[in-house]
Image (cartoon, rainbow, N blue to C red; front, top):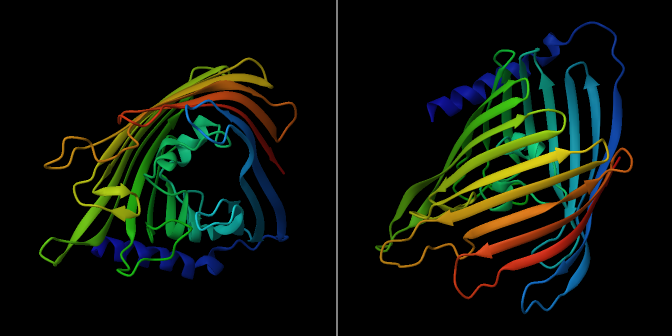
Length: 343
């Protein structure tokens, strides 16, 4: 608790000196609009599936970045996607942050910020418009949240970051307990190699059988390593664990999940590449039970080919299959044509 207060105080001190730190050189404020759309057509080969095929727009992002002063930038992004409440297209506030580059080694962001749990993994995977990275896909973390973070460049090879966020993600407000998620990561980059270690923790009150409430801490742990052997070939693997939670924002005592993801890409030229990915997700067995608590345990395979005809446009033909471990749940088997265009 004391560490979190010191971290917040340090960030406040940084921001307090922001105006003083600005260089006196001339600066012209400027802004830029940006957007990104994920579109797909898929054919479902799963046994007994009623909806055989469909066109979809999974995501549409609309944003604006404005350079207020030298080293100071404001950004806002709207995420338009499906709402579980009923509307197929609802706009969410995905990012609304103020970013201050305090020095060449320190950068601070606050507001609705992008999180750091799977940023490097998602970038290395490279096909967000086809499938989310492991942590995002299976509920180990959120891509954005309300809070504050600081990035530190420790050396040419090492960097780190630390953050304090609400912990509920960008679609929900702070819970009634008002307890934040605290975490950090360490990243190493050298030529074509990248490695990362990440950890976070958040606590919540959980009702017990006797009617009392106990504080239970849920925690996420991630290890990632990737290597670009050349401009043609890259390979990566990651291990992830979530303890005391059925989701990053849903504390559940003694409910644990873990999983592995391996992915690779071979690039023929600037326009054509082939890719593949294997995910494995599992959970623990609760005391007194014979089956693991998570019915969605299993393995997933994604493989396909991508074509990029022009800059900012990508199209991919791919297969996506998920083999559930629990009996009675059919294996999902789908063919996709995915498209991403951005400006």
